[in-house]
Length: 196
Length: 196
DNA sequence: TTATTCATTGAATATTTATTCAATTATAGC
DNA sequence: GCTATAATTGAATAAATATTCAATGAATAA
Image 1 (cartoon, rainbow over the protein chains, first blue to last red):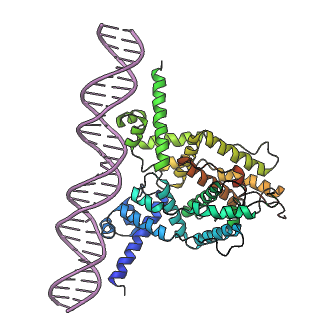
Image 2: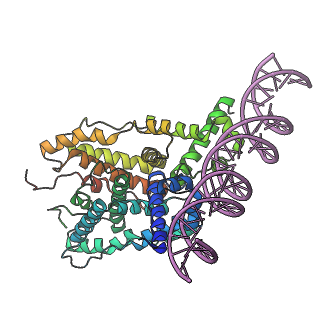
Image 3: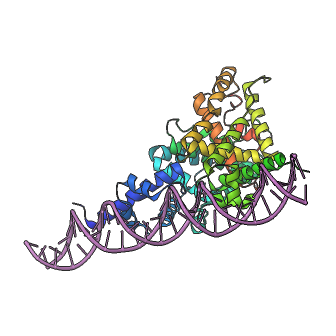
């Protein structure tokens, strides 16, 4: 038998999941509270028993997205390029097993990008800043010769935007499989025989 | 002196441009008709003199986006990979000179992806289907050895999603320059010495 | 100059969407 | 079983947003 506490928690999760799917497929602004309630299988009134507003519900999801964001460092890699390979393979693998992760990914990206995101929420979403984390790894790889020459911030940005573009499509449409991680890593990989 | 007809056309363009910027930076649903009017420097009432509804205004932009979409074929290329290089360089170059193009790019992508897009508009946006156009070129490149092995549709998808991810960031934030076209082409490029 | 047509405004109205709340039903503890 | 507490509903209300329209001003044609 399910206790009251368990039931409450389950309901909460049901709402969060329904909202996540809708925010990702339609965007936050276009998602109606009634849509969320319908998808979660409850009345609209009940939603407000669990979340005081649409915005607070959004905030709860963004907070979850932030907490779930624990990307690995570059430990245990012989070469900088290995970090990108491991990272991308892990990310794509996880997205395939847990499509919810791809959805969180896209949710965070929208919150960061859109000027319509309520300021307190945007502030939370902005705490994830992967692009800057890549910069020192790229610099290391350029020194050792496994990563292309070029502005580290631009390379980091190109790599990450590509991953985001791919995740964005995958989150709403799994018909086309995710690409091989190596393909995307080739954005930053130095070509064999490219002289220093 | 400006004739009435010219003035009318200019006003129309002002509205379209203001709407384009807002739809891209906030998304269609989050953009208020009053925001558009304010940015275009006119009253809300006047907007309805030019466009009968917010949705028709959106449709006009999507129609423009569709008509502006004339991507080059693979003529005049010795190798399939050259097509991707030329294509990407042309696209990025154009985006830099005419940032409005990056905005249209993102507008079309949102219309295609979002389940909140009104059906008639989505139908128009969906007429742009670049991914399928790339497939035969990738197949050609795989035969001649300039393009990686792997599912052509997956490669095409990886390339295009990456371009979209990059355009999405660039459209709203030109602080970070666009990457080198070659970096992105490396997603599909076959590595030197990779045996057939 | 005068009449006519078009551009323009912003307040009023209509519509959509978020939120509240009084009433009802189910559950848990006694 | 009885009582207290929590879950749930859906209709009512509030708030936000799109759209209309009567009135005004400016440009053009006669």
